[in-house]
Length: 51
View 1 (tube, rainbow, N blue to C red):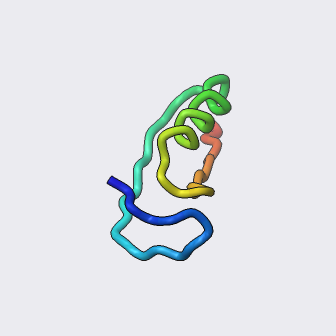
View 2: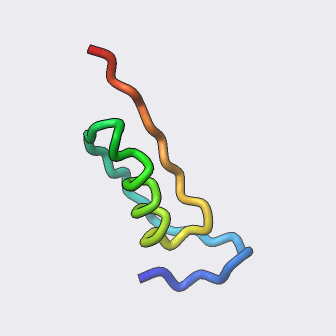
């Protein structure tokens, strides 16, 4: 549970989450992460895989 305050620096433990999905789902996934993530601006890296 996140207990920080908006516009104030907070320190704590973080974890990395990694998964694969089709590019068509990218915007929906990004919006979902932003809607449930406790940070004002979560770090979201998208790495395209070229086959």
